[in-house]
Length: 267
Image 1 (cartoon, rainbow, N blue to C red):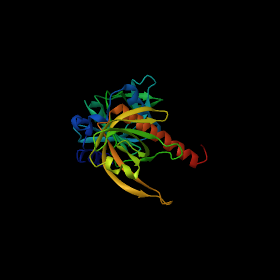
Image 2 (tube, rainbow, N blue to C red):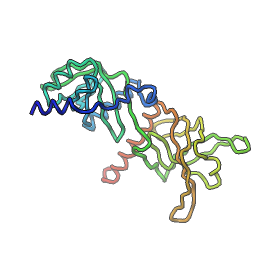
Image 3 (cartoon, rainbow, N blue to C red):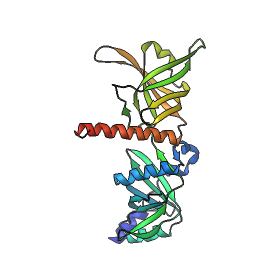
Image 4 (cartoon, one colour):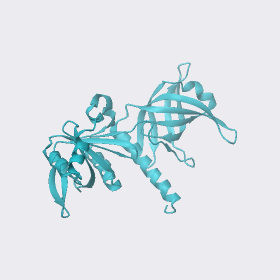
C-alpha cells in the first residue's frame, strides 16, 4: 500500500501556484499578521483539507490545520497518511499549501516544517506565513444583500455634458470580485460597459467604509413581478487590496452564517 501511495504522491501533474505569480495576483495577497491568522483560524475551525506541495511541486501530501497559536507565531498540522511523504516534507526547504474556504482558493508557503508532539500525538509545526493569497474570482459565491435595509454604493460620475454627478445606488449583491447595483431606467446612459468610477464608497455594516474603483461589466433591464422596472448594473472591483477583500469576505461570511442560523431556528 505504501508503494501505491508514493506513486500517487509523485506522479501527479504539477499544479499552478498563483502565489508565485505576484505580478498577476498581488491584489489578492494578505500581509497583515492578524488578517493571515484570521484566515488560517477559519481553515482550522472548518477542518478544511489542505494539500501541501514540495520538491518543486512533484510531491504532495494531505493535511489539515489543527491550531494557530494564541500569539499567531505557530501553526500545528496533522501528519499525512504516508510516512515516507511525511519524512520528505520535513526535509523540504519550501512547501506550498493549497486549500479553499467558502469556494475561495487559499495559498501560502512555508520555508520548513518540523515535527512535534501535540496532545501526545505527532504533528507538523510551522511558523505563520509572511504572506497569504486568497483568490476569489467573480464566479465564486455572490451574496444577495438585505432588502429590508439596503446597502448603498455612492458612485461619483460625470454626466454626458461634463457636469459632475453623485449617485447613491442600492446594492443587489456582493462578492469578492464585484457588486450588482440597482439603477433607475433613466440612468442607463450613465453606466456603459467598461466605464470606470473611482472613489466609490460602500459602508458595510459592522465592517467599515470601503473606498474602491468599479468597472462596469454589464447592464440589463429587470422587470419585477409587480411590473416595476430597474437596471441591474454588474461591476467588478479594480485593483482591490487584500485588506478590503478581507472586509468583504468577513461581511459575506457573517451574513450567510446569520441567514443559516435563522433558517435552522437558531437565530
